[in-house]
Amino acid sequence: MAKNIRGNNDGSNGENDSYTIAGRGVVDRVTLVQETLNGQHPNHHVVHINGEDYVRANPDSQNSNNVNK
Image (cartoon, rainbow, N blue to C red; front, side):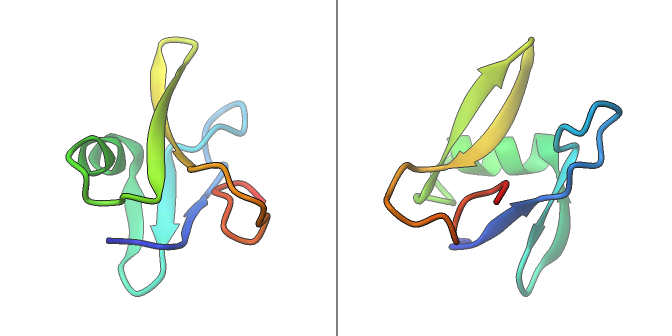
């Protein structure tokens, strides 16, 4: 269960093809999306953009925990 997930902006157009989780390292997008859908990262949700699924932090008043800060 990750509290801080960072997008790596490593896709061809700057999208997140992978994410970095502190203490775990780099996780590919497909794996992280599935983990999030399975409830393993309760502070995050999945969004569907241009035919692809991405992980985002749940909305709150802190910018420090956003996937893309």
